[in-house]
Amino acid sequence: MAAYPKRDVESTDAESERVSSVPSNEGVTSRRRFLTAAVAGSATALAGCAELADGTDSLRVSVWSGHYADRFEESVVPRYEDEHDTDLEIQRGWDDILTDIRNAPEDEPPFDVTVAEGNFYYYGRQDDLFEPIREENVPNLDGVMEFYREMRETEYGVPVDGSPCAVLHREDADVEPESWSEFSSAARDSDGVGVDTGFWWYPLYAAAIGMDDAEGAEEMHNEELHDDVLAEFESWNVEGWASSGEDVWQDFENDVIDVAQWYYASVAYDIDDYDGITYTMPEETTGWFNNWCVVEGTNHRDEAEEFLNFLLDAEVQSEWSEHAPLAFSSEDIEYAEGLEEDLPTTTEEAESIAFPDWEYLAEHDDNLSDAVTDVQTSS
Image 1 (cartoon, rainbow, N blue to C red):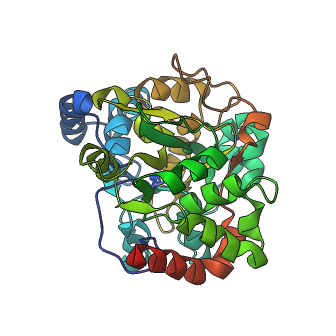
Image 2: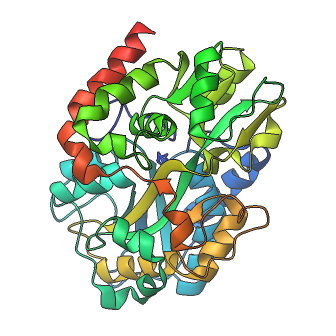
């Protein structure tokens, strides 16, 4: 079953906009970074900093699990604590993030700041889980690319980071898919395809882009074309239904799949860890993007907004990219070497990513999710 906030699901420590995820939308942890990340996390937990205004010791920040959190703790946390003399308490989560906020007393939220990709951001706003952003406290919002400021309204969350979808495939494959149309052709002839099962909207958007019956992924925003998108998706011969990046790598290693839809942020810095597998970045693709929010009821609203302003700083995002191959929102981002070729640096380039529109999708959420589940159970 597709796992996302509107449904009761078992919490997982995996990504996909998930992220990441970051989602998430980000589940696989690079083996070469694991020990470093563990040490960084321990140091963060033990760090002693100045008390906040109400006498508490730390600002509580909810982030995606897996290597998204590892890399966040490697880069963002130490810089913020050094510059602001404030301890950050990082809380890793996934499907349980919104549930934890909903279930907490109104004046005792489980954290002060939370990450939220498009689905989480939409449903969180519907349930009044976020405080309005006072823009005078977040001046760096003015430096965000126009596309990200207009993609979703920013009244309750600021756009910071995300990832486009990439194509994973074997190096010795007969074809090297460079577009979602070529991916669809390869998927139909493949012995096995891998897709994200938790956040089903990304493979569907990729299928829509590959159909090329409408501009971008607009097939997903036309109810009359949903059956066509689902038929295209069903033709992919999906054998690997991944709930984390680790699932994808394992399916390749076990010869279950030859090609997969996954996320650039989960593969660009880790691809060398896996023999015989490479990736391509379609020029036109889909992906996830995080709006960061102040949680309703926090006693640290000022400090939370200060933290959001910090996340939008171009220098912070540039340094963050040295640790995590994410797409960032600042107009003045200077990506780590090798990333600029694949990630948008202007509004025009960002427009090539068909981010899911939850203002529309929410009306068809259950039907589309059930249809994807039917494909999964019959595969």
